[in-house]
Length: 282
Image (cartoon, rainbow, N blue to C red; front, top):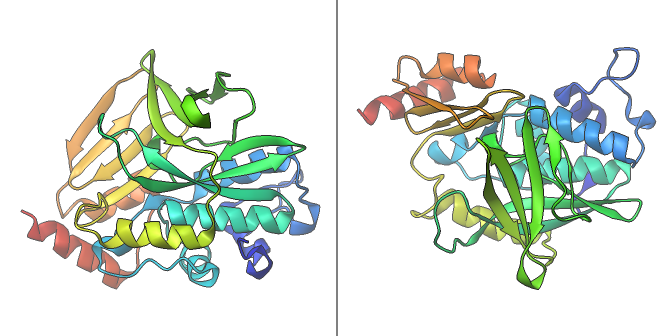
């Protein structure tokens, strides 16, 4: 389903710096499709790989075949957005031996109107129990798996707390506690999505004029204590107590912010083009 047999798993594990008990990179042969491994891989992935949609701004097609994703994120050490990141995570988990299926979600962070399904998430079954896995929701997304079998259970992930609540028709909603208030992040139904479905959603997200990714910089990172997002010119630092610091990033600061805030370093040609685009918006 996810082309896991084509993945260079050892290269992926090196990219996400997953560690064994002796401090060395854990070889793929030691991994098992159990909850401990699922937590370790999910957390390492979200720690190592930045959420970004810069190829959209650069006018490049976003390819979702595994070879292209691996070349970009694993070997090229770039980031990616939800379709890329969760397709890569799904391939790795499938290769390890997990049962992985896709879902399509509606983003609820942008107001009260009914949004289209534009977000890709994963459901991984471990010993008969379903877990939400999502490495591609940006700075508000979970760092670790979230249990789906017990709606309402609060899950602490460092300084951040999540829960899943259930609505009509089996719709599940991932919520984040921030500043003492539960906030909906996204909602998804039980309908299974396949890689080909993400190709269609990706086409809209990467090319439609109404897509939030078209025409602006989006780079995000779900840090342990501080969550960071650069959207357009505005850099936001989000804190668990509800505080949010904001500042404007000019073209001369852009590359330093990429590096300092997101650990993102781009090839010289791409970096120069993004600075040019950023400057043209003045």
